[in-house]
Each structure stands twice: as structure tokens, then as C-alpha cells.
Length: 313
Image (cartoon, rainbow, N blue to C red; front, side):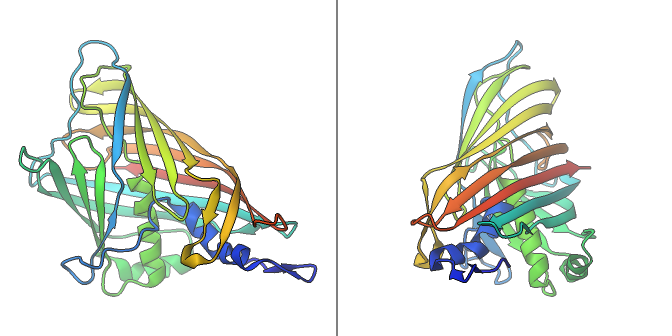
């Protein structure tokens, strides 16, 4: 943790309170929402996911068809989710500190337990996590007790995720639980929703979504359908985030910080099979620089962030 004073001058309380929150903010937008304690299983909690809207900019070439996810009950899939976060932070002229999260590899076994229908247009997917790994020795030791943890996704016919359920194994250490939640938080808010309107190769559309973290963000994802082979879609993706306010209201009424700079943009690719619940492959990186100051301008905190996510089979 960075020092809270420089040259004998204490950093204001609001600014000091932000130091802990700032690192959390950067790792995975959307995973900071409190768990839903009304979950039926005591060890399982639900992280709500904000709704997204899709707007077609260019319908692409003929032939055009509506793109709908349609995984039947009993569909199984294995996939691997790999995430990391590189975060550097500096307060005033103090040395730059590293708050990065190590890469974590999470093999997943998925099964569709409920298929979308006219009565309920939501697919429910159950996930089992096993053999998780990381190059960080301390986190690797913590992950050992998390083997067998579960997760679940509620997915609309557009492919948009509306809820994330996490079910840590009984022996999961706090470090493992936090790393898993962070990884899934990144994955959920990098999911590409598909348009309802008929589109063809070359089509472009935007997916707009509010990202709920310590700072409320408006996220815009611009998607291009670069190729289609039956149910398999190849997508090019660009992402940008913009704060809804120029002020950061710190949690717990701890004060406010001015948002002097906020840049988060990125790009990548994804391959989606509309008959499978998880991406077939994907590689996306989003990052940028942020700067915050206390109201009287006496202290400034700067961050440089890069979040990476990959999907493999």
C-alpha cells in the first residue's frame, strides 16, 4: 500500500480512502456489486449484471439472418478462461507502485440446464471450475482449495449475460475467491450481444451497457461480423468506457474525488458458436490511463491499467 503522507503532509481522508478502492476499481468493472444474500444455497451468491442494448449500424451483405443463441438442454462444452490485470499507480511524486493481478487460467466444464423458450427466453448454464493455475506461487497455493468451485450464467437469446452466480468450494481461500470473481467479472462485461435484426457478413452494431463499479461507467462495444460459417461467427470487437460523472463518490460516505482523466479503450476478436453457451475462442485487451484528485487539488493519484482476457478450447 502506498504511503499516505508526503513531506510530512497527510493526504486528505477522502484521498487516502480511495487508495484501497482504486485498485479494486481497475481489475474488473462490474464485479464490485454486493452479493445477493437471498440465494437459495448459502454458499452461492449472485452478482447482478446490468442490461445491454443493441443497435445495428450496418446490416452487412446478403444473405442476412437474425442471430440467436440456441443451446439445447444438456449441451456440454469445455473451455478455458484466462485473465490478467496490469495496474501501476502513483500518488503525487511518490514511486510508482504495482497493483497488478497475476494471470489466472480457469478450465471450465459447462452444461446447459435450462434452454431458452417462448415462455422464458433465458438459457441457464452451470459451470464447474477445476485445475486452475497461475504463475504466482502464493495465489497458486490458494487456488488448490478452490478446485470444484462452481459458477452459473443466465444468458439471453442475444448472448447477453443477465446474471452471474458464483459458488465457491468450501475450502476456498479468500484470495482464490477474489481472483475467481475478478476473472468472471472481466468475462461477463466483455461478452458480445448479438442483434435481433437480420444481418450478414460485414454487419456492424453497438452494444451499450452500464458498468457498475465504484465509478458508474457507460460502456460501448462496437462489433463487426467479419465471417460466418453456419452457426459459427467471427467477430471483431472494440470497447470504450466513459464515466457518467466527473466526480467519484467514495463508498461509505468517505468523500469525493475529481475524475481528471479517464481513458479505457481496447479491441480484440471473438469466435462464437450460437449452439454453445461459451465463446469458442477470444482475445481482448482494454486499458488506459486515469487520474483523480482530491477536491482542493493538493494530491493526485494516477493509474495505468491493462486488462486482458482470452478464451480457448
